[in-house]
Length: 558
Image (cartoon, rainbow, N blue to C red; front, side):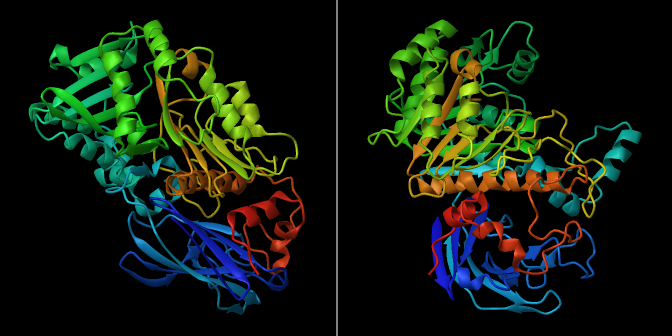
């Protein structure tokens, strides 16, 4: 949901996702003089109205490092800020107050106010939910300060070193419940559940699926299987005792990388698909709790039917070459990557000719305002070049890549690359040691591109597809393309910006990293606010990408 308001030559535009709200501010040129930042006030969610907090303050103002500060005293010196302490399907009101005066005596002035409601995880055609995962490390350390001590004690006593249940639930942020509640909808023999899965391990999910089978639901599973493959061994262990007629090992020399489930009503022995669960989340401990992942549930008979058709072919025992031929014939991609008659479509792999990669490139190349992305593994060169863009073009390009590459930690000004997986185990100045204990080295696991997010016609590409040659021609993959769905785009874009802003901030807080750009507030102590309006300089310099950021995310101001 989006909303805008303007007052006293200050505007605000809100983008409300499922568990985050992005606020984009703008001010008229004549209101820049003396602007120290923005104070933000929020009410809603059964909470009293309160000033929101920042983390840094003006030079010379006493402040306990790592302790949040009210934006009345420590205003936001950005034209874009996000609130992630919100709940789904909840109404919120935000007041944006420009701050003038002096650092010692700030003056809070009247400004615009907007009301928005976050997206639901219970109702609606599309339900999109991200976990908190490792990107929540600092908040995690504040919320669970004794975790390290408890883990060390467990180690000394010879017990498994597991995070407490409440910590895991906090990291999941409801993502696990989205999966298990979807499965539980297969309540009796009038329901069918068809699962295509790469990693089938997490006990609570395994038990929930088995319970559906025990209730009489018609449950079938296609799972990754390869000779001598450890993942196959894990899958077979989790599926021990299952009726063999309900299982189909997907024998492949690559990977069966799908993670989707189709829910259908059953009448006269025939499936009538009603809903599909998809996204990037493997059904593992790391996938649910530690890696940045998404679950997307589409209450769409059309989309569910597309996934079910593929499942039926796979369950029938199709080989990889047969599957490629079937997808080529039955899941052709539109010649126009964004056709008017197909604003939403599902795509599958493996397919011939890498036509999906060509379609992704064509979609990215149509960006006129911005490209946001969050990707996990090595990308095809064509995808990387499309995300990278032409030198000095005016498209905002903001994103993360889990592994180092030409687009790793790509910032809108094409400088200061950073690696999202850089952990600071000893903590940073004013920050706490990170304790989420991610062991796989994969912090970013989403495969997500949003094109023209700030427009009224955004394009979202999301799924299991890693945007690589292997994902196109060898692996079993799936993806959704969604156009003109601003509510869906907000769910993805707001969360993508959470991940980006988190890792970007962590990179700059490392004393070994510096921003090569000129600091308009040069001379101030590290990690402090600018004591005057110089912080706005780059945002109002014609032709800068900071200015484009302010103008595109924000709303016009009179």
